[in-house]
Length: 430
Image (cartoon, rainbow, N blue to C red; front, side, top):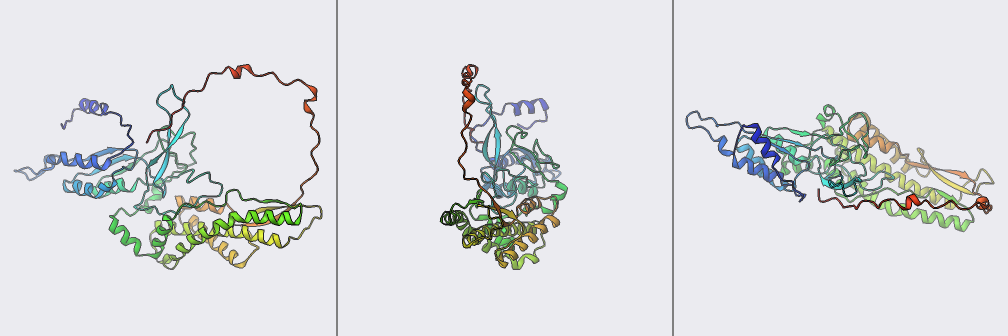
């Protein structure tokens, strides 16, 4: 029952049992609490005023598995004028999922940190960021970054009811990167955080689904960005072959052809992504929202950069099969190095210039934001390639010393006698 006795409140909170199901019904809990205590908001017969002011406060580390209850929860809380305040996690930028560091709570098991997938986003009604990895990324979003806002549904619940969403993270630092090692246990790893004062003007549209769709439909740049964001994950060429040894003309040509296959697989997917985004270009200059401006320019700039980088790689290999000018008669190896210049076509050169212009526009117009960070990362990767001559020695290696006749080192018995490692359990559903 309701009480203002602090001791009773502490005991009640302390008696809450741990839930290991991994199922979060945040909206159901808030709806039920508002419904249960609605009598406190009933108007007094004499004064016409409610008996109490009521606010609802929720603590959660997820977005909730029952987001379909958002609208009904908003209506219930607004009906009884109960503002909702949430202390929760920051949403990862443009993504629904992130990874949480999990360490087994039982010390008899392996205490090595593991990572479990958790829904903590996105910060907008729909993800407004394309699924395009950076070159060399180990997997999808190996290092998520902060969006500057809380998960959309919970934040909108707070906004619509007159409350506040407090995004908290134990490792928040807007001045430098945060590594996985220093990420606190049971917290999501977010590599970068952003100044809330800067992010304020990039606030997502906290509106209903119908209103969000209407606003998106009002501008082709927005529509094309969301369509592109729905497309499947694309990874750039993973460590493309860049060293080609010329033992014979036939072997050299065959090696170049094999290397072209990686680019040939990626090119049509990048073209499809580009074609979708290109449809919105006509409306880009009509866009007045800084958030949508940054989102569209970043997406088109990154797609163009990866598209040119891939096509230029393929074209450089094709040109090499037709013959390369050799400056050093001793060289027998060709190395393809990243370069800013494009030497295989004026169209690609123009696309490269457009990509750089878009990305630099994001960096200059939206400093201190996630969009600027990602644009800067893409700009650090040259979009072109150049050939460099080298020499590979085909002589067989000389005989090794064979240990100079010395006896092998004795076995390390201490290592052999080490205790067996502790058993390891996989993270539960977090």
